[in-house]
Image 1 (tube, one colour):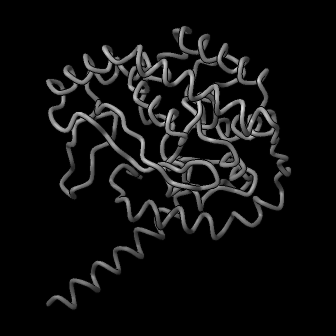
Image 2 (image 1 turned 120 degrees about the vertical axis):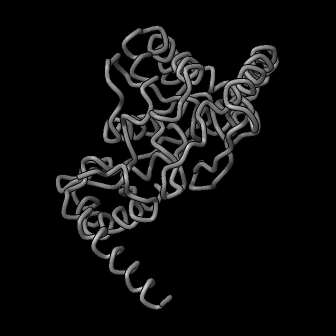
Length: 275
């Protein structure tokens, strides 16, 4: 079954049905989360964010100017990509990055998969994390932190289980690296569980350890190549029967078929009225 041809509306309907069918059971079977709040997590961490991000913005200014010029010739205007993301306690904010994908669309007007739109230069900046430099502005403003769960799109929020929603208890970060080097793209389950571990263990020691892991993660060739592989993780859709976070490719065919059938009926009904 070709899932790449599903429209955004159809994908969201599938996610809604998954949530309706499985969130309650998933919540019952998950371990509770105890978010750690200390003087460090509430005040010292923020002070460090301001100092480091301010210095980083100054130091990386020439690099950002150069990336902006190359981006202009690579994908044209606008050179910036802006998108809403979910921040601490579910508050939304906008992130700004340099564009590294074209806006090519299919016959239905839907954007082509990211793997078909990302440019060669885009792959390079993703692999080297240069596309993340502008996020230091979000850190400086207070929307993000240096270390913390990565900010995701607002549409995902109502799909989270109670346990995984706890990742929103901390400011989202530039990165929340895995605690061990791997050679594959993090699954949604792995990412969310890593985020939950972080909010339960926020401390100066944890952040230092995470920064060390971030450097190791960036320098490791296999991990770097995995990071540059866009869209392999797919769209977060909800949970499997055994309570694991899944992407679109892991959703059972029955959900896809049901939504295709229902949306097909709706389209035929609409066409009938138009006549």
